[in-house]
Image 1: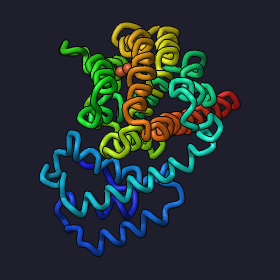
Image 2 (image 1 turned 180 degrees about the horizontal axis):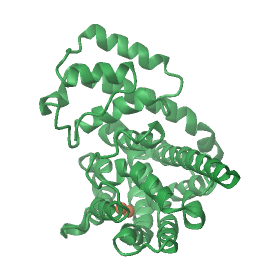
Image 3 (image 1 turned 60 degrees about the horizontal axis):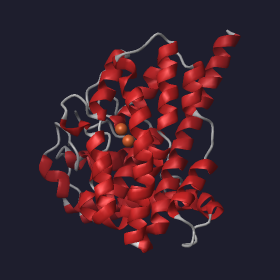
Image 4 (image 1 turned 45 degrees about the vertical axis):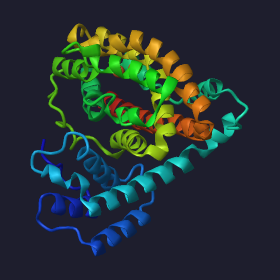
Amino acid sequence: VLLPEPRGPISSRLGAHLLEEQPLEDVDVASIRADVGRVVDPLTDEDVQLSLAVLHELHHRGFDDVDDAHEWDPPLVAVRVALERAVEEALRDETAPALAAVGTDAGTDTTLALRALVDRAQGPSLSAWMRNHAGVEHYRELLALRSVYHLREADPQTWAIPRLHGRAKSALLEIQCDEYGNGRPGRMHSELFARSMAALGLDPTYGAYWAKADATALSIITMMTTFGLNRRLRGASMGQLAAVEMTSSLPNGALAAGLRRLGLDGDATWFFDEHVEADAVHEQIAMVDLAQGLVAAEPELRDDVLFGAASYLALEDRFARRLIDRWTAEGRRTDAA
Ligand SMILES: [Fe+2]
Ligand SMILES: [Fe+2]
């Protein structure tokens, strides 16, 4: 995978450093920080999201045209932290109303508060739209956009493992073992997703759709990795994972049903079918043993557990709205023509 094309001044400047055309100096870091501070919405800004995704990727699988030694370049770490803080601040603003509505007072049971957040976030259902209306082209677009996460499914949360202990750590490991296929080659969820992509005629190569993924798609993975890579945000990381598991089983069933309506089965649906069953179990582990277990061990993390869950729900809502709105508008144009 090669470094993706820049989308603005920040990613251009980072690219010049990573490709060793022009090293970042302290003054450049200061000016990038100032640029980040001027961004109106870091969650939808193409330059911010691509830059952060690229910097996070240095800690995951890297790029073929970038020297691995750049992972810990001090100026890059400084820029990464500035971008992460901007994203985190935007997420804190975005989620404040939802968190206020469910009540974050420490007396409320954590699982009940998580459930209330999920129930409250009933925006338009992307999976129901896919089940009822999607054509193969819509599925292709959705899978290409989702590939920036699902081809490395579970990796962003794995960063949290050494940061936990006791019951919460066991619960996280139990979930992650399933996500990574329990030692059975070819059964990692990321590999099942690649099969589904190939069955739909997409390129299942890791990183193949970086250029296609816009800020709304990238924001979900940069949020997850920001939570995972920062120890102080371990509560948010686990709350985010709990929200994923709590909102996965039924939607994946709907996504599989839509594919079958289009005559697709086997490799195309395996990933989705797998999640119907696995995540019905993961939901309980994530809510009770992981989220509640973590709060029992470290009560001061409670607000961040809920913040992480609310952040995931908010970004998924943005993602769903944007796709459904555009596809509905395109459908109207096609009908009119
Ligand atoms: Fe999974
Ligand atoms: Fe899961």
